[in-house]
Image 1 (cartoon, rainbow, N blue to C red):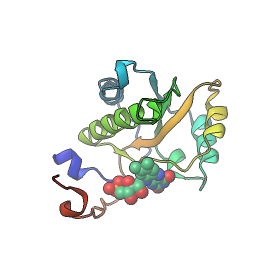
Image 2 (image 1 turned 60 degrees about the horizontal axis):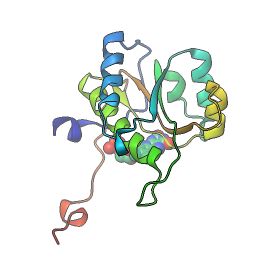
Image 3 (image 1 turned 90 degrees about the vertical axis):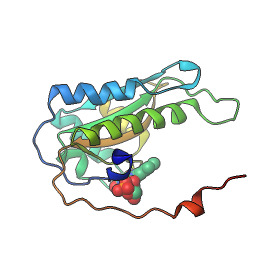
Image 4 (image 1 turned 60 degrees about the vertical axis):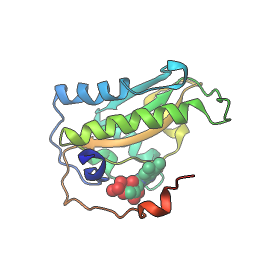
Length: 164
Ligand SMILES: Cc1cc2nc3c(=O)[nH]c(=O)nc-3n(C[C@H](O)[C@H](O)[C@H](O)COP(=O)(O)O)c2cc1C
């Protein structure tokens, strides 16, 4: 609950690199997430090459500077665009869960993240040389925060929860 309430989106980062051990712990949190039929048709990419980060920034609709400022960018990709019985896509559902695991673990390790949807999927794929048939479901910079924490409000429980 501390991580759930304490995590916030971080949009400014120190250049200090993330230790290999922490990188692996974040990846391991992603790996442990549940997925439909346990298929795990996903991969978490840790992008740290300055050239690739610059290309990712160009692929972001608002040219988000945080993608270059952060020492690394998480890019979560899916290998199946199948639709489940409920007609929702398996990749968006599975990878949203796994990315949440990674982001919460990152918070516990003192790292900031910011879930991002403002990017062109085609341009990200081009930037990273990803083939057809792969979807880019989520992107987030990751690194040590270089800003004061801002806690953003949530709707009250009675507005978003109902016992039937
Ligand atoms: C699906 C999704 C997409 C988002 N896309 C962006 C984005 O493109 N750029 C950005 O700066 N923040 C983005 N955010 C961050 C949200 O603005 C942020 O989570 C929200 O304002 C709540 O703030 P908090 O994360 O600090 O609690 C996104 C968040 C989610 C969950």
